[in-house]
Length: 313
Image (tube, rainbow, N blue to C red; front, side, top):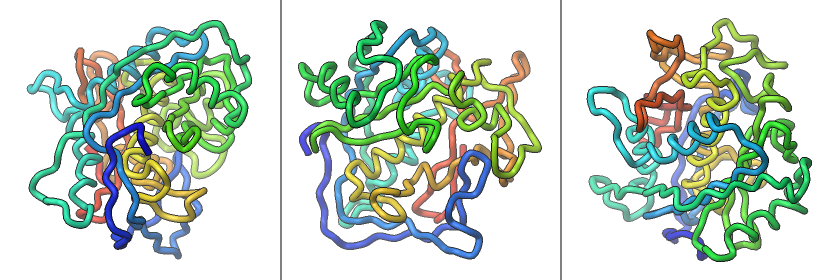
């Protein structure tokens, strides 16, 4: 693995018990009768600096670009300190997994820097509007990272692009090309699957029906839902880049530290209710984190390894 600084440690197992998780407003495959475990499998996690290449595939709208890019830039940069909580606090929970590694110093948790090093506008639809992971994703990744090997490409699709597996299985996906380059695919649910990937802003097709809907913090349901999906997937990837880190279940169908807490955004959450969050008095938008440029975000819960519970801002 050469794309990012990673830490290889022993095969000692580190496990965390947790209660049933939520997924887009519905229970995951873990039932209330089953106690699942996130287990440390002895492999690497991402460390130090992650240089990101944002690949905007198709005509991605400006508000979606701003929401996604500003979220990533807010991970390591505090906004106005009078506005709390900050996105940086959410990211510290992801960083805290470094302290859970055998032999790590629990009182010294280094920063994991996410640096948006490059943005690429691929508006030619060179690979068409129906992208398959096996055929086209490796080509897109290689084309845009060939001159920068230590990049994490994040492919964000326009609303008129269909991505294999996105929406039918998940709202975002992470993987690896050629056992070398990690990548993330972020689907745009605006046209393809709003009733799957835009919760808690839109009713879902199946599972417990929502008793409460939230207004998106940036007044764009798809953009804010994409931030949620990206945050969840990024947390999973950092702590489990090669399916040998922190996760539950079989490697090919793993449940990561972000996925385990889907559909939880505040205290008191339960299926159909995202929990207690802040409301912007000017726009009515719901949020739980402040970022740069006075932008607000609704960020998902993350599994807290110290308390063995889903943690929210």
